[in-house]
Image 1 (cartoon, rainbow, N blue to C red):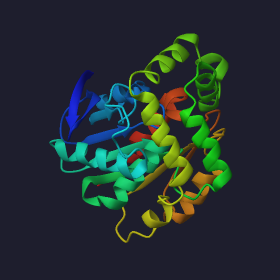
Image 2: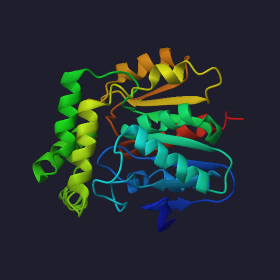
Image 3: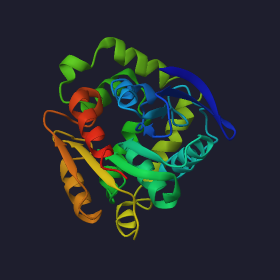
Image 4: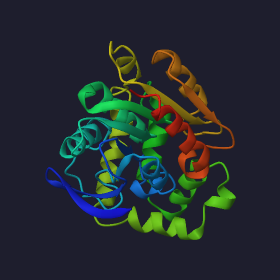
Length: 272
C-alpha cells in the first residue's frame, strides 16, 4: 500500500492506494473517521484485481481542515467527484459508509458518468431523519472530548469491549482535535442540524432511469442507522441486493472484514 498527500483543487487530502490497472474502486469513510478505517479491506480488494483508493474527507484525518469548506454530503460529493476526475480511470466502483454512503449516493445521482457501481454501507441521508434525530447527531458530531469519542466508538461496533482500545481512543482524540478540526466539525454539526434532511438522496437516486448497480450492506446490530433503513432503501432503490451482517454494527467493514470483503467482491464480479 502507498500513503501520500494529494491535492484536490485548493485542498490537500491523504490517499491510501493499492493495486493496479483500470478496474478502480474508491472508498469513502464516514463522519469523524478517516481513510485508514478501510485497512482490512484495501489490500484484499487490490489482491482481487482492483486499483483501490481511499481518501480522507476535508476536515478529517490528515486532510485540509478549518472552516472554509461546505461540510456536508453535497460538499463532500463535489470533493469526491473532483478526486475521481483526477484519476486515470473512466469510471469507478464507489464504496461509502455512513455519511460516506450519503456522499457516495449523492455522487451517483449527480455524476453518474463517473460511477460503475455504488456500494452503500449503513448509509445516512437516504431518508429524512426528523428534528430529534438530526439534533442528536449534530451534538455527537461536535463532541470532541475524550468521553464523547469513547461513546462514538462504542456505538460504532458490536463488540466494543474487544475492539475499542485505549490506543484507538487516544488516536481518535488527537486527530479529531488537531488544528482546524473543531471548526470543521462545528460546521458539519450545523449541516446535520439544518440541512441533512433537505439533502436526503434516497428517493432521487431511486427515481433515476439508468442508475448504476447498487449493493447495500448493513450490520444487523447497527444502532446509528438501523437495518430497517437498509430494508426501506432496498424497496426505494429498485430492489438491489441487501447483505445483512450478523453481530456487526455500524462498521461491518472493520469488525467483520472477511465477510464484508466477500460480499463486495462477489457483487463486483457481477458488474459489467
